[in-house]
Image (cartoon, rainbow, N blue to C red; front, top):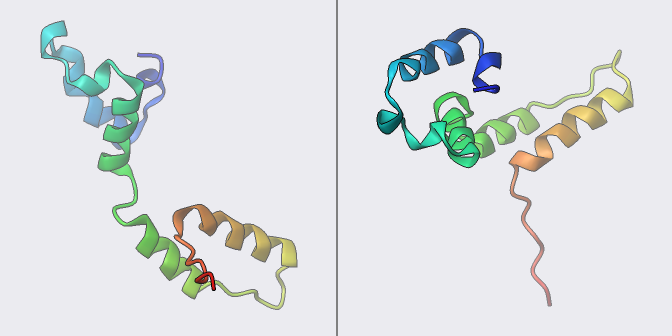
Length: 90
């Protein structure tokens, strides 16, 4: 319930009907953190994080007025969502 108290906007409206349920009617994600996290991600997360990160990487540019640090941070932020191909071992 502590985490739910921090929900705002659409996420709060998504959870509000759950508050009216009796204990035996509660979905599994209200009792176990991993399931709650999965429910939030499946409801509000990026539907295809790899495609989205690939698109962002394809369009990543360093403008003349940008510092290299900004580019590095933007590039590094895309890494966790991408699957990097490993070269074959000989």
